[in-house]
Figure (tube, rainbow over the protein chains, first blue to last red):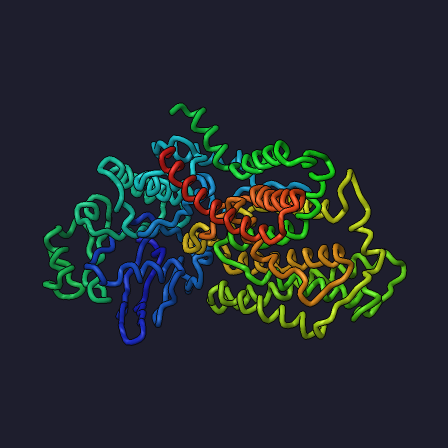
Length: 254
Length: 331
């Protein structure tokens, strides 16, 4: 395998006396889909926030494309090429679909030297992106508050597919999606990975992890309890890792 | 419901305050003798210029999901600074600049700078120290007014330099230049809010601050700019106030804050943030001004004004809730 895209080396995070992460080490390659599994409170969301720039680790280091990496803000992570889809949706429901799609990256044109939003250009980009993904939304000028949960999640997913970057973090992205939309979402992830983008997906649903992931990383009580290729393990083995019946780091054969 | 009816219904909801304004003006014109004349309408616009300008700054921070209670005191301090420098009697120092017109940009710069400095203090404390805008700007509301009392010693400055006064006297198309300044501010800031990335970001920050932060928008920087703008705009309102009264008194502008809040809420801005437009706020300002003018014309005791304003704010809030229910049915 080529040089890994992101390497985590003994990353820890303490909240006062509570040790949320006790030393996490694993790596992600370009074009690889890693499913991050673990029980509630295992530290998955904390880990995502550290990579995405919302939280600073207490100790440990990260290498992104071979270079020392620490994002102090989401803006820095984004500039480095890391896109994140959070569990609680990151949409502004008081503005329309187009504004959400381009949040923080608006297309502008200069009028008398002042940057002015180029609504028409943005709308056509969004229309194209949603059409490619097969997402139907009645009007791109509808405020997001008028859309259903599934439509909102579809916007978030399409947003990350469109912007791409080098690494995508997905924190329970399908929580509000129906069966058909979930299937399309999983297809989207494979499609993104085939472009050479690394994908980390957090999920509770074993079936989804096995459908989409190349590798499965299990976190238990703030440490990596298992790191195995999907085709070398089984759902039962993974469940054992999550609940703690298997030794840390051990990948079962079979 | 066909898309067209739905579309037009949304248009009405979005611009409800303008319909209310037209309705109120029509009612007043019909039932109040002598109301329907150009002079009265000009007076409504003229009388609303100080309140209008102040409401712009307040609306910006409220739309961004925060609050600025200090605008009234800031306007008073700016007016007092201009009054002390350029008034010739009372506590005025009677500063003279040559040529005379130089006093205009200098006094304006002083007023804007005073406002901007207090805006920086507000913004810094709220954003960097993560304190509640309500408390911080309430404190500013008090200490800035205190500063006005301190620098004036409770006395007043009169007789503003004629070169500055000129803005309140010179008329263009029946309106004094001060009123045109207010209208101009509304146009400029409406465009900024609706058409520029900065304005778009303010609206989105008001809607979901976490989301905008995660999307890489520099939330803190934008918020500090919003507070500085609110301060500077309040400073401009103070400058207009000094021109209007040809000086400054220690209690100048007391009560304007509540009128500004009323105008902003009536104009359709939600105190929860993220909702509202500046043209709507201007309609709210004009609505209040029209009602004041009507009360004057009918020779009702001026004390009624406050009661009516209060009821109007209540009506605006109820209307807002009502609009929400209709919208939900539309969706």
